[in-house]
Length: 177
Image (cartoon, rainbow, N blue to C red):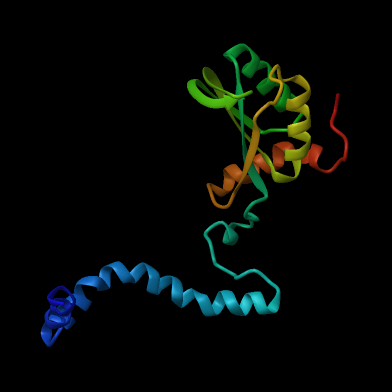
């Protein structure tokens, strides 16, 4: 019984106030999220997403209209061939090759470890399906990794350049041969 009563005694008087002040910094992130709750609930009720001003929105960039896609390749030769092709076909504005990554994964019931080259591909989000189809058609892997993440913010002139370089292909529904 003493173990149960001891906290009640410690929290009496000024100790409770001291304890609550010590916990305040830990509660600030939670409290700040709670302040956003009414706006989120209001936007859910209206059927529109919450409006949050961002630096990108003032520049005319539409958040999420550009994506960074990631593809792993078995070696630099394959990565360069695919990178050059997607840029030539205007499926991407730019491809960065990141050599010598180590991938550890399960494949057909075994844990595998391989050295690979990671491609970071910048494109319009609307082109990700065409990019994925093209990569799958030329990639040597049985199951090629193609994943894309939307870019919410960034250097506005760069994001506009990505859209400009890939604009001609995004307007048409077919991919050049």
